[in-house]
Each structure stands twice: as C-alpha cells, then as structure tokens.
Length: 453
Image 1 (tube, rainbow, N blue to C red):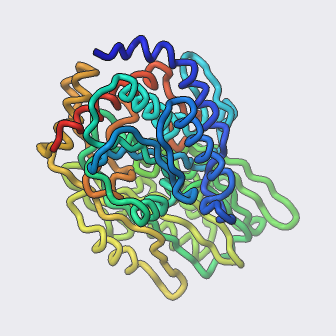
Image 2 (cartoon, rainbow, N blue to C red):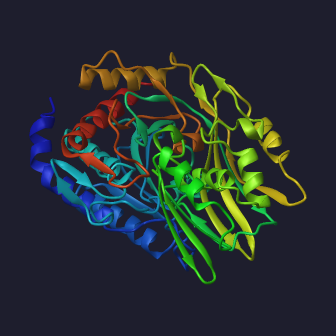
C-alpha cells in the first residue's frame, strides 16, 4: 500500500521549488534559433525540466532536438502517454505579482504557467516517481511527454510523432477534472484589411486569448470623444484619450480571458471598434469590423453561428496590429463538436472582399469520445475514487489540447470543478493543496489506464 500523503508531505517543498524554477522561464514561443526551434528561453526551460525529472525524481529522460522531451518509467511495448507543455502565453497586463517570478500568497502560487501547464508537469513527475518507488509491476512504459509549442498549434507533437510512435493510450493534464471527452474544432485565421484611415493600432497579446487592451491612433477631431467615452463606460471598459499634434491616441482597457470562454472577458479591440462606430468615426476598416464581429462573440455576423448540446461556436479577436499602412488581426474560432470544421472554414472565407483577405493559419477538427468508452470511464472512476465527487460529469470544452494530436488521448485535469485559475489571464495561480491533490489524481489515472488491455 502506497502512503501517498506521507510521500507528498516529504516532497512538498521540492515540488513547489521545482514549479518556481520552471515559472522563472519566460517560455513563450519565440523566433527559431540554431538548435532551438521555439527560441532559446523555451529550450532552456525544456532542458531544466528534463534535468529536474532526472535528478530530483529519478526518471529516464530524452530530449527530442528541443522540440519536446520525455521522462519515463517502466518497460514494455505499450506506452501510457501523459502529455504536458512548458510553453506559455505572453504575460499580458494587469498582474499584481511578477508573472515570471512565482509568488506564494494565501497558499496559492501565482505566476504564468503555474496552472497552464507547468504545475501539472511537476505534479506528473512526482506521480511517476511515487509509482516507481512503490515497485508496482509495470508491463507498460509510462511516459511523460513535455512539449514546447502547445499554445501555437502543437508543432512539437508533430515532430514527436515523426521521431517516436504514437502511444497506446493516455491523457493530457491540460483541461479539467473529472475528464474531458470532447473538444471543439479550432480555427485560427488572420484578416488583412487594405483600406483604413487609422494611423496606428495595436492590441492583445495572444491569438488564443480575449484582448485585454487596445491602443489606436487616429486623425484629430475625427470622432465624438463624448460618445466614445459614454459607449465604453456603459460597458465597463476604461478609456484614455490623449490629443497630440500628429493625432489622437486612444487607449482602452477591457478584461482578458481564454478565447474559449469569451463571456468571461471584455474584448478591448472589439468594444473599441464598436465604440468608434458609435462615435461617428468614418472608416472602412471600422465599418467592416463592426459588420462582421459583434460584442457577444458568437460568429453570427460572419454567418457561422451554431450550437449543439455540448456548446456554442465562439469567435474572438485576439491580436491586432498595423502592417505597412494596412491592418492585420487574428481571429480564434471554436466549433461545436458535432459540426464540420472544414465547412465552417469555407463559410469564413466567404467574408473576403477585394479589400479584405483572410488567411487560415491553423485548424483542428473536433475531438469526441463517447462517455461510455473505456478511456473516459477509467479516468472518471479514477477521479471519483480520489475525490469522492460522484456528481461532476465528463466535459466537452472549447479549449483545445494535445489530445487532438494522438489517437487515444483525452484531457484529465488539471483544473478543478468550479475553480478559476485565471489561465491566459493576469494573476494565474495554482492552489498548493490542489497541486498536491493533482499528484493523487495522476497516480490513480495512470494505474487505471494500466488495467486497459
């Protein structure tokens, strides 16, 4: 019998220190460098994670050319895969603690990646260590795969599958408990608009997040300042307007959120565009934007709105910038699991004009497992055994995970029911108690999957 509570108590400080170490790396995917496909800091974070897995937890490790790496225990032909990621979205604005210096307050660890997904990564390392030390007979390999590019389309897992075979069964602790049996289809597009009177514009920090800020520069006296302030104030956004000799600068602050849950945010870009329209700013770009993107992010104005029993389509503008006097902005679309993603792409592209070109940067089909399939049942039972929560049911989420990269994988953790860890927002955190509890869930999940032939 494994005395997990005693082991967790002994490893608690080390687990927290390991997470602090990984959070200290600003591992946002950046420009490719020699031997660093996703940037030098991203690579350094992977190397440190592999070092921790080997030195602190006694795991066998392998680096796959810094695209990703893995740590494993056990022997056998079959592999139980656990897939986490070390890359993070940009910090963004509004933090009350340093985003890349893990801070402990009220028994919570704050910092970018504490929840998504570095906390789960160290928790899985400890789970493998405990299973190894318990001398449980392993007729399969248990492999913790640590990726470096989950937030930008999972190119790292494409490389993994070129170098290593697909695993037999597995989970990714990058979603929610009890487990996730469906993920929406995902489209990332870029709109390029070739006519505007706007002098400059910038906003957002990530394509898969609701933009929390937007700054625009326009010709002086080209809009009604009172109307703009009125529009944004009524909708609980802040605005600063500064008139200069070469133009008026408008800075709007909204509320960030993950792109899959736009209802939790207030998109600064979208609200500012509609505010300018209301304030009688006469511009082709603003007219096009407002006629194709509404404030509730349902894709209706693009002709894409749809819903099924598992959820509705969401459509979010994540970033915007000026490029050579033209405007380029990203759009993140999550398609309900029972709808065809390719058909939605066709509909999206029909919104092009001679002045607007749309590029599809990335798309993923939806993922769906029947709740009665063994992988769902086993992981749900593992969750229930540890938590004694028999009310929470398997979920379908808008957020996409590495599960889509593999043939027999679903998300299991790391977020707990009714807990908002501010993923992709300011002040992301993980509760220390829940971080330790994650270890128990991952051990139970791994042992459950060992039973599947």
